[in-house]
Image (cartoon, rainbow, N blue to C red; front, side):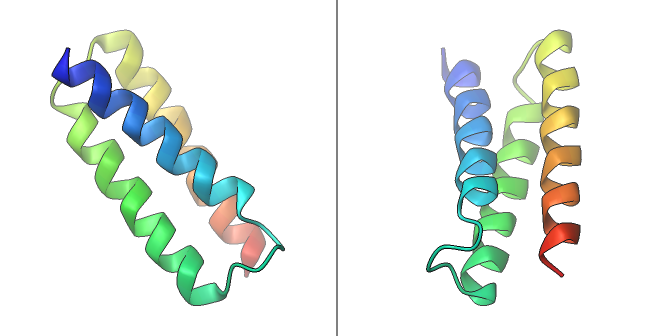
Length: 71
C-alpha cells in the first residue's frame, strides 16, 4: 500500500508542477515544485511495479519538457 501512495504522490507532484504554469507561480516556486516532484518520483521508483516504473519515466520526461518550456 505504501508503494502505491508514493507512486500517486509522484504523479500528483508532477501535475502540480505542470499545472502551475503562467499563474502566480514565480520561477523560484516552480524550481521548488520541480525538485519536490523529482524527489517524489525517485522515492516511488524503489517501491513500484515495472508498469508503474514506466509511467514514472513518462512523468519524469513530462517534468523535463515542462521545465524546458518555462525557460
